[in-house]
Amino acid sequence: MKRIITFGTFDVFHVGHVNILERARNLGDHLTVGVSSDALNFSKKNRYPIYCQDDRLKIISSLKFVDDVFLEESLELKDIYIKKKQANILVMGDDWLGRFDWVKDKTDCDVIYLERTPAISTTQVIEIVKRI
Ligand code: CTP
Image 1 (cartoon, rainbow, N blue to C red):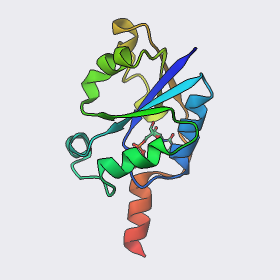
Image 2: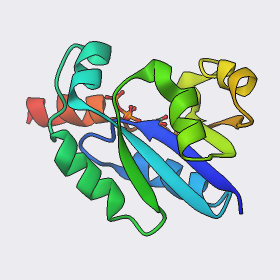
Image 3: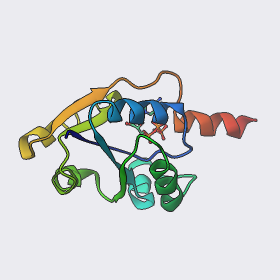
Image 4: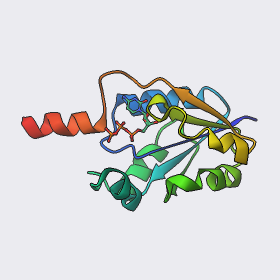
């Protein structure tokens, strides 16, 4: 059984999120998703998500290709989460290209970066809605 893990904020859920989760799940038999906490998002992007962490966890856990969710509290704990969840492959969008290669040295987990869906992001959706 091949276990996949991925991480993200998944705020203002959109089709780019669906695509990466669907493709991640298709690389194996089980998909775990680490959903970034509100505090982690604030430290990363200097703003809180529109949807709170409990709502984002509920949305992601309701998807048919997601088997398990948990709250990601720190970007630097990826190796700990990966071991705990017994993941074989870490999937990230290619906006993170190279950033998590260190995981390969600390765990038995492979790291794969998938191409982002073009022309959509949470930030872009928020900007469009602001202008309406
Ligand atoms: N993602 C993707 N294609 C997009 C947008 C996001 O594949 N068009 C992927 C990211 O690469 C990441 C995951 O979805 O692996 C969660 O990304 P997240 O940062 O939550 O979404 P973004 O839309 O990129 O958010 P933001 O605009 O706030 O950076």
